[in-house]
Structure formats: structure tokens, C-alpha cells
Length: 289
View 1 (cartoon, rainbow, N blue to C red):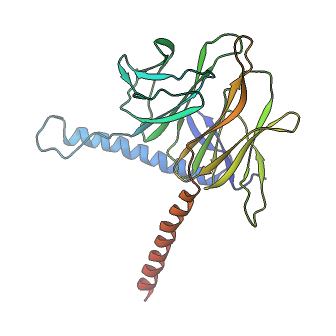
View 2 (view 1 turned 90 degrees about the vertical axis):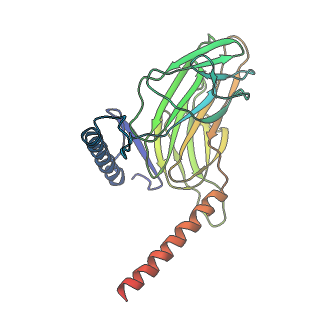
View 3 (view 1 turned 60 degrees about the vertical axis):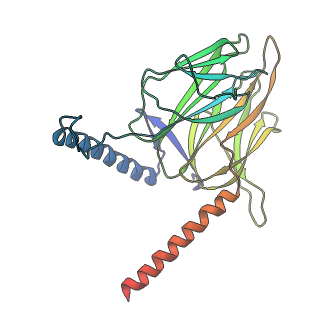
């Protein structure tokens, strides 16, 4: 039976959907309704205001918030810079070292190119082919292409705008070592620790909580470990990094988790929810009175 704490999502036809999960079927219905509403608004806008430059209009074009999340999983001692176009350095004066991630809020459009540089050398270029018509987190990771050359490769994913915490598990390690990722409850008083296997190149929905994620080798030993604190409406990344290089230095397999939240964030979210429940209870009593 599928554990209620973790729900797997799979890609089909460009949309992320749940596997045997009625909750995400409901989300799909809501998203479809939003799409219909969006198209309706567009047609209404054209009907009410055919002249976009007319004075005094109250109709505005829909604007979506696209947050760009970039991770550097390319093993090396030199940090990278990210440029949008020729001169717009997204990371400012702080190059991104190996195993670091960062969020950028910058206007993006189809056809934009993101250039990754190490010093003055161009490491690779990623072209944005299309953008979703909704608020979304756009994830991009740069990593080693293989164990022989120093060429780079990219992995990308668009996180759906869902209520649940979403976690993408991606393997950027290059080498012969085999490991499987696992997630388990963080140690705590009075808790029965649960442990479940994860799959690389997948996205799961996880309940808010404090977890440990590990890499378990084929010999049954833990190769790497990290902590994961999840909250609703946030998207998380778990990366297996490292390289077993044929030439040059090798880097061991490690786990990168981003973003790293403080467990106190869960308590700060619980208080407003409890307050809202109390307000609803009072309103319910007043109504029935």
C-alpha cells in the first residue's frame, strides 16, 4: 500500500499528475478550471478593450511570477557565474560554488539564454524554450556530463503550483558507485521512525515535517546524509552530486538539499492555522446561535 506521507507524481503529456491519488485529481480539476477562466479573461479583455492604449482602462494583462532556482552540481573548486543575455549577471558579485543553490526573481521570456561561466570561460548555455502560463518555480541544475570529459550537462524541471510540498530527487553523480536515496522521519521522542525508498528522476509530494534523507550503497552502508524540513506550497530539491573522474580530481557522492529550512518554520505555520480554526469555530457557534 502506498504510504500516506509520500505521494509520487509522474509526468504525462507535459503535466505532473498524481499516481492513484484523488487529491491531485481535484487539483487537476481546479487547474483546468483556472485555465478556462484565464482564457475567458483574455477574450473578455479583447472584447472590452480592443485598444490597449486607451486611457482609463481597468483591464490589465495577466502577469505570472516565475522564480528561477539554479543549483551548481558541477564538481570543482571554481565557482560559476550566471548571465542572462550578455551582460546581466544574475548572481551579482557572489559566484556560486560547487553544491550551492540560489533563487532568482528576474523577468524571463521564451528564447532567453542563460550562460554559465567559470571566470572568463564559457562553461555552457541553457536556452529557455517555453514558460508556463501560471506561477511556478523553474528549476535548473548544471552538472558534469561524464567521467571522461569536462563537458557540462543540464537538468530542468517546472514545479506545479500545488498546495503540498514537492520534492524533486535528481541524480547528477557520474561514476560506477551505486546508491539509492531514502527518506525517514528525523529522530524524536515518542516517534516510530519510518523509512521509505525514493527514486531518482522523480517528484514526490510530502507532508510538512522534519526528515532525514540518506544515500545507501549496495553494501547497505550509508554513504551520505542530510536533513530536510518541508512546508506546504514550497518546492524542494534533493541532489546526488559527485564524480568518479577518469582524469583530474574525483569528488565523493554527497546529498544536497535546497532550500534548507529551520524546523521552527513548522511551528510558526501551525499557530496561524490553529487561530483560523478557532475563528471558524466561533463563527460557527454564532451562526447556529
